[in-house]
Length: 452
Image (cartoon, rainbow, N blue to C red):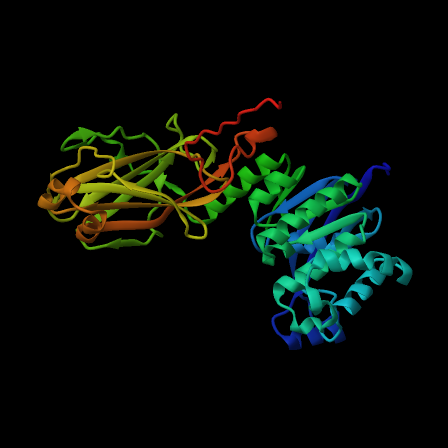
């Protein structure tokens, strides 16, 4: 075994017996030959090598086997097959409050956890001031942990694990409950631990954290390794997996290949498969229905994963079910938490809009958006709306509130599609060319004054 290897898994797997009822479990325990259980394979045979000082991210959807794998590495679960070698002392934050006695005070639990990690009483006393300062929970340090909030739990747990400096530190979503300032402090400590040779394994649903902190990534799906290696590739595969799960399976319909013209211009229409809308909810006033949606890159290729700065082309075709006047096409890009990053309709761009649309007419819309936004996964809403003709003619003399109150929302397809945005590069400032949600057009200047 190489001296620089911290974790070596060879064909490791884990399966659990599944019983139809508690009685079936009891029968199986008493009469093993008379009742056979079914088995659920939580982790399928996999190989993994993590070197000392590496920062490994493990990603995947809920139920993919991430936590089970971590419990195997931490020694909490025994593998069903394979061989495993873990070098050094392992610290683990696997579950909020795990390893804490709710009746004990924070100080008593910290002492107990430190002892489990192999520290003597004298070593713990030396580390105690650092643990208390890092946890920063004040007088609650000497109160029972059953009185703690979830944030206090994770503060104390992380403080103990990080301050005793294990050889391997495993963090399973524990930092998600902390506030942003504590999370930043935690990642600064993780970076310091790594520089001191500690191996860090991070399980998280925050792809931003994986991109910025991890050297390598492992993508699991239903207990199986889908990808192992470069972080950017792993995140791309993760987003692609999420898009497949949402039911965005391409549906080809030849009737969408024909060339149709709007009243005042034509929209170039791609010759590609479109998203299946059968599972999408449409909110409509009965006058318009959405018939097809597609996302492509600048070359016209169907795409769901984009790099920061890329342009996405969003296509949507609607059918007028009644006569309409002054129709506008809109699009909204939302974060997974519902925060609107961008929303606009064709009237706001002062583009030509159809002044009259007969029932049965197809309306083809294309939105071209430069994705100068934060990395992450986003939802796309498409809509058809409109105004009474006299309102639209007077739009430049009306307030925004008046225009909004007079607008018609004929059809809205929420979460019509999803798209993932990843950094344009793997190193340097190109990974994070700006902070916040969007890359606003801005300039910064600095002037050096010569000292007299």
